[in-house]
Every structure is written in C-alpha cells, then in structure tokens.
Image (tube, rainbow, N blue to C red; front, side, top):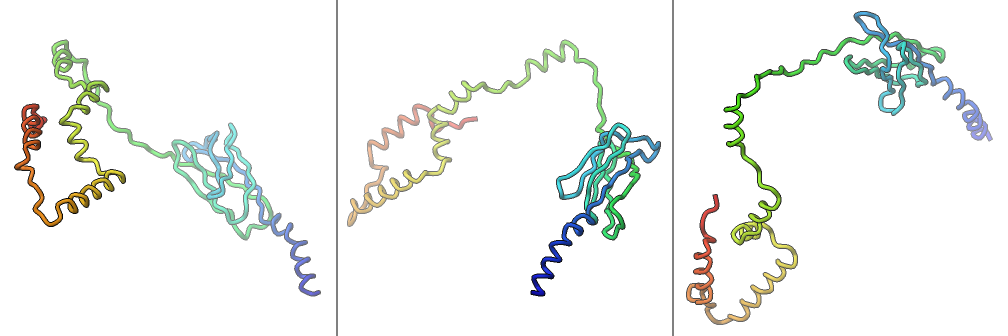
Length: 205
C-alpha cells in the first residue's frame, strides 16, 4: 500500500516538474559594432528541431527547457550559442545577443578586353567540338569497338555457366586424346585472314 501511495504522489507531482523545466526565453539580437537590430535572425534549439526568427525590431520569444543550448544564426554574422542555466529560478530568461560580422573573402575577378576578330576566328577554328549522340553511337557499334567493349565486360551468370559447361563438354569429348590445335584449323585461319583484311588489328588512335 505504501508503494502505491508513493507512485500516486509521483504522478501527481510530475506536471509541476515538467512545468518548472520550461522557460520563456525572450530577447533582442543586435549588431556588436553599431547596436542595430537584426531582423529575421534564426533562434534554434540545438538538436531539437525547434526554433523561431526575430521580427523587424530583432525581438524574439520562444519556449525552451532549462539546460538546452540555443544557437543564434544570421547570414553575414558568426554563429553564437548560449546555454539556459539548469538551476535557473523562475520560468523566464531574457538575453541581449550581440552578433559579430563574419568576413568572407571572395576570389579576385580578372577583367579582360574583348578578343579581336583574328583571335576569335583562330579560337573558333581550333575549338574542339564533341561528337553528337549519333556519331558516338556509330563509333561504339563498329566491329572493333564492340570487340573492345565485350572484352572489357565481365560475363553474366548465364554466360559463365555456358562457358563452364562448354569447357567440361570439350574436356569429356577429347578424353584420352590430344585436343586439336587451332593453328591447324583452316576455319580459324579463314576467320583470321578476314579480320586482317577488315583492319580489325589496326591500332585505334
């Protein structure tokens, strides 16, 4: 009975615990050098996905919990972070946050005069134009290019199984005898001569 009473007392007091941990944070964000209000600056609770932005006067107000980190961000200024005190008495906390300018160095821009007619004609004639899709497809479908592409591609499952079965069949077919050599095969020589005439063995630059 005593444990049930203690649990009931904890449940009854839990709303007060949650209510005491919530803090109404309000304040103003200003520039550190001229004390001007910064409108539309972001006020975000770190790792919580909650936040707000300042109004036209740089004023903001947001409900946070004690112990949370608050991040102030604005384009052109360095980020600033504050921590809401965990031992804060009361449920309100005000802050005047000063933001420092963030200096960005952009790469130098070089201005050049317009080219002359002779320079333009020279660059236009020597400009390299990439092949269009049709020319690229025509090159890739040539016999020599197809052989290079096929040689560089790995075999899929069906081709690997077929090659393995073919090797086993040839091994069993010529079991107990010397397998023939293609150097004495007239069909292989004919295929080689035709490939030579077509220029399949010429280097492609």
